[in-house]
Image 1 (tube, helix red, strand yellow):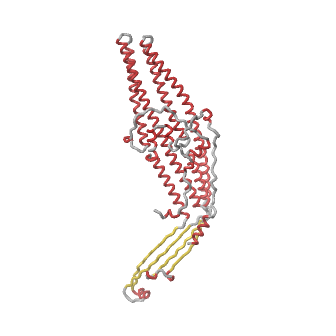
Image 2 (cartoon, helix red, strand yellow):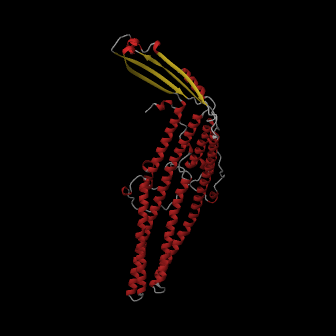
Image 3 (cartoon, helix red, strand yellow):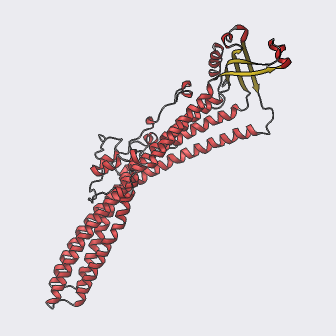
Length: 484
């Protein structure tokens, strides 16, 4: 065994063919373009970066978000894929170590006639004898050229890809839930708005009816007011469809059947949290999809070494030692000892260019993964810039829409009073009421979009995740192959 250990040390210190991974660069700006016109006044750095949704200060959202990591089935699948990747690392590492075995055996043989008398010293009849053996064996293919070590390197990087994919699946599910939640709250607020509007239109219908009864308004005014009321009532009923769908989507995201989750109605948040964007260079450390793309490049780089190792001969060592004989009581004696040692090497002399093509394919795969990594980085910067622009522009639009709502409300009040005074037709009231409802819906939509954009910006910045959260390399563990 000491010779095997010495050979193991020699092999593990031998050369490893193929290129070492030195990292990969990606284009990145010095600053975000949109931050020049959008300065966060009070970043909430004290907020737990893991629970990024706490920036919205909504206890219902907080309770729902905490169920994603535990119950979301897409996250559960990604977690299982990560555990599988870790197991594959151990499976590949096992190839670095010798395979040991033990073979106990017993055979019982019947001898008769002449053979019996000549071999065991008896005449006639049958004679049964037993033969015993106990043999231990060892075989090993030393990783002289580093093929297995490159495979381990590739599998470890792949396991890190799976860990980043798990983080990305979790962040995506959390962001989707937050978006659906604010969409649901927007529908709740729209229901409240339409309910209030129906009440106002019902009051307007009463006014026109009274005016008609007094002979100061036409029947057409009453019919018009009634039609407006019924149209808004129908619109109110239709809002329930999307509201139910958002609630069902949230149930599935938290790992529940739709029938198991009911979210009480609530108002859409009026405050949009300030999201600190940080430096562009930090984005490369904050996005799990960028980390996954970079680790994919590292894994593919190692596969080039695996392909190059095929040019070198395969070396294998074997040894066996044991005892064989009869009877069992004297089995473990020098006379019954058996042993063997062996070594072999094999080299492919002609393969029709297979190895050359394989190496070329792996190098091309590396270039492809590098391009995919750089595209992922560029897309990440685009997403951040998009959401920064959205927040900046929507904030300006919200101010304008609030002013429009206030102006439309004044117009309705003035026009309704003028109608009561008989100075304007009821069609003027309808026009102003329709404009008010439109402005109110637009203002609500803008606020909804601002909250959704804030969620999208947090997701684009990687949430609270960092590349340092990736697991390190899995250490060599030769006992892992025999532990249950």
